[in-house]
Amino acid sequence: MRELTSDALLAAVRQWVEIESPTQDTAAVNRVADLAEQQLRAIGASIERVPGRDGFADILIGRIPGEINGDGLLLLGHMDTVHPVGTLAGPLPCRVEGDKAYGPGIYDMKGGNVMALQALAHIHAHGGRPRLPVTVMFIPDEEMGSPSSRERIEVEAVKHRLALVVEPSGDGGRTTVGRHGIARYHVKVTGRPAHAGAYHAKGRSAIREMAHQVLAIEAMTDYARNITLNVGTISGGSHENQVPIHCEARILAMVATAEDEAEVRAKLLALKPVDPDVKVEVTPGLFRPPYAKSPAIQKLYDTAAGLAREIGFELVGERIAGGGSDGNYTGALGVPTLDGLGVVGDGPHTHDEHLLVSCLVPRTKLLARLFETLE
Image 1 (cartoon, rainbow, N blue to C red):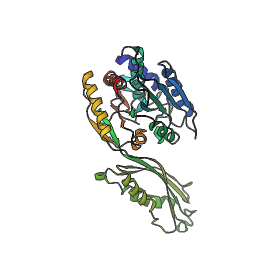
Image 2: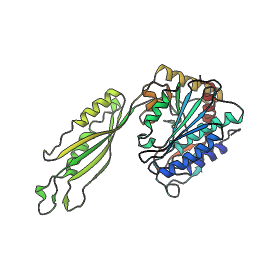
Image 3: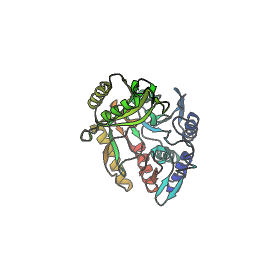
Image 4: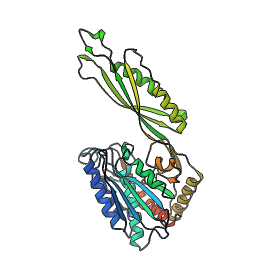
């Protein structure tokens, strides 16, 4: 893209958004990978496509030479969304209302992916190269914690000097300089079945026990310490005329530090049933480690803020984000990571998801200047 205009950038974003790509739909996410691969090849990138595993789509990696050789920049984005196929034709069609452009995944995070690609395309169209080599890595399963991609992200991260993540900005445009950790847990309760009418007293309800456990789990939330536990899903029972033998729940825990995660984990693994005749089992799941702002990250942010000022706008400020991203993995490895470089907007994972059209040109120019100057 030789000239960066709002109309051209919005059209490029819409091309991505119109390919609906919920994580679990492998073919749909791979269609986004096909488009991204085509766009990377057009700007001279060499392509590595890692076949998907565990039911997920492919990891797409594009490598772009820099003016100087050696370790370069890792640019991270994800291709999957939380919105099911059919959202475009239903509650969240692509549309523009004033400064707001709506669509599934437009904010989280197809808008950011497109800005990064168009920033690189802009440099290429003017006959230039990034200062350092750039590895663009598009992930297929970030919305589920990147279970099939984490290992490869970490392998790539340690080969690079810096990581830039084009997840959306937060709080009206703030750049992310650290993230809390995110841990997932599975709780399984096993009771004793019985006829719900004639022999109700003989039964031990798994759902009743789970209700006690939900209250105990959510009581572990401590807002003052930025620790939150959310019981996000529950399923149990098979018939209203049977005392339920099984009930299962999924928990997401947000923690500020690794020590907090260890504390929460110990509490969850120590949960005991209220009814001694019922069994409670807690199994840890995926964990995104937290990372804190370092002097190197502060320097990255200050560089970005200075470049934004040269372009003619101000970065709103920095933040420590509660939500996770693949930047958790790079930051936790000690790779200086600047996150939240994507679009400004709001409504992630909702039918109000949108970006601000007015952010597209200045923030794409900022990404281009980062690619051109970071050493």
